[in-house]
Image (cartoon, rainbow, N blue to C red; front, top):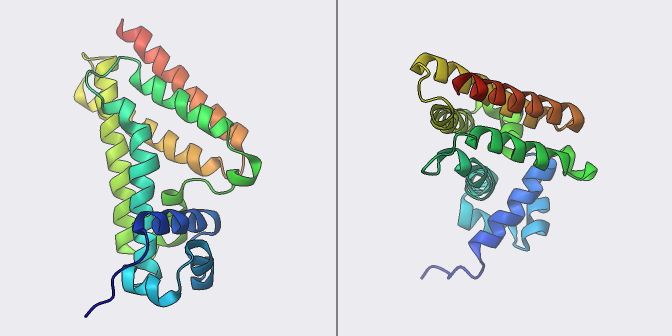
Length: 198
């Protein structure tokens, strides 16, 4: 008869997510995960299959708890004409308020891309899916900003803004001030597009 799981999976994933976010996948050891989660190696492996399985669960938790709630303003109905600017103002505020000791953590998903997505198809697909999801959300918000813009214009602008978001989150690891300035430039550009559409 299989053993009954005697721990809260959500709490374990959250603890693992935090240690992966702090140290990165490669630098996080199984003993680190045991200490962070309070579980032994066999319990972790029985529940998640491997260190990688636990990391994948941590990435999904990160998307659900941190990334998608932040993007919600871009896709809520009805979408406000200033939804994209609101998103970037919120991102700038978050980047401005990151404690120095956490600024090096950056974005868990993008950190994993820098770490091993180049040779890991699953992780590459997760990062690209995030990029596509953000671009689609931005396209939605940009249509609300200027409903008369041609589809190609909206797609080009969304692609550029997606690159700004990703670049700012990576840049925040080394220079938070410059990351905020980059996001502020996106807000200025959005305001300019909004004025031109009026």
